[in-house]
Amino acid sequence: MQSIRELYKIGHGPSSSHTLAPERACHLFTKLYGTFPYYEVELYGSLSLTGQGHRTDKVIMESLPGDCIIAFCDDWNESFPNGFYLKAFDANHQLVHKWTVFSLGGGSIQVKEYDLDWDEEVYHESSFKEIESYLTKNSKSFYDYVNEHEVKLDKFLKRILDAELACVENGLKADGYLPGKLKMKRSAKELYEQSNKLEGSEKERMRLMAYAYAASEENGAGNTCVTAPTLGACGVMASLLYYYAKDKKASEKDLIHALAVGGVIGNLIKTNATISGAVGGCQAEIGAAVSMASAACAYLEGLPISQIEYAAEIGMEHNLGLTCDPVMGYVMIPCIERNAMGILRAVDAALLSKHMSQVKEHLVSFDMVVNTMNETGKQIPISLKETAQGGLAKEFLQKDE
Image (cartoon, rainbow, N blue to C red):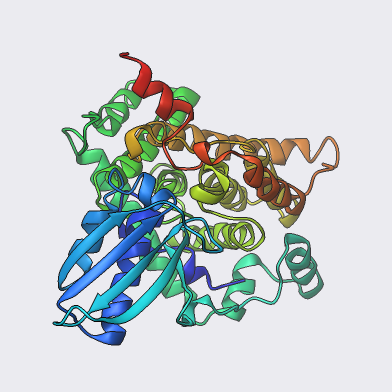
């Protein structure tokens, strides 16, 4: 598996695949080859079909230092379904450099013509079963495990935690409307105010949803968020961390360790399946985020390794087959509301794991459900994988006809 540093990334919304990944590629391209007067970028797959709603064209033009022509293209014949060609031209309009960039999900990229240092594998284990065996044999915790493989990870995770908390905090303060043709009103602030009038579990659940709305609305506005594992699903883990920090007064140390636990789960999903909505549908984004947050919640509740695994399995299993059908290509409908529902599922998964484990042994493992998600994603039609050509996106456009 790759570094957890390549899973959690701080960046601007609204889409890690559509904005963060192209931005990273353009900045690296310029850093390696210098500046040129002319650029051409050809977008393919979901980058082409929903790139305008996701601001892909704008972030590319902002990231390249010369005149830039952007084309939204069909007939992509490369090995990965989501990507673009990046070309640099000299003053005589002669082609100097060309990259084939794959947007892998969560802001991660792969370049056909250039080996990236951050693509290196740093973990030997590639399944939960292998990790659990190692932890049990050596009496290690999840955090011990990641610290053995990644130097000074606590400092990195502290930055991630701070960014997560700030994202929710900013979202709770914001008013007005999100950018774009949908003219969506921000709701997090009012949801949080409503929660203050409630009691008991209803108050708790409403706050969790308000926090998820806050982070997701910040993402929809193009503001700073954290991929966990993607920007479109950023509200789930952010809500969990904010709730445990502000409402349950969890220590910073415990929250950092919870991020590590969630990171291991996200890494396993990324390694054995996908975290790209363009590849696996929203089960790969929200499903993965719920699975990560379920495991993190189970850790924060003091559950043992076996129950953390069960929580992560529940979180993913009950998002199998979830499609990605963003209305008009914006990461707003159904994405924001889906984050709010996702955090409730994560907390419930940890709760069910705790008590069901006392009743019977579960028969479906986390590794099994991740493999199932991968196969399910291959069977989801392209119209339901971040292309805005089917599902709710299609129905919404037909509503006034």
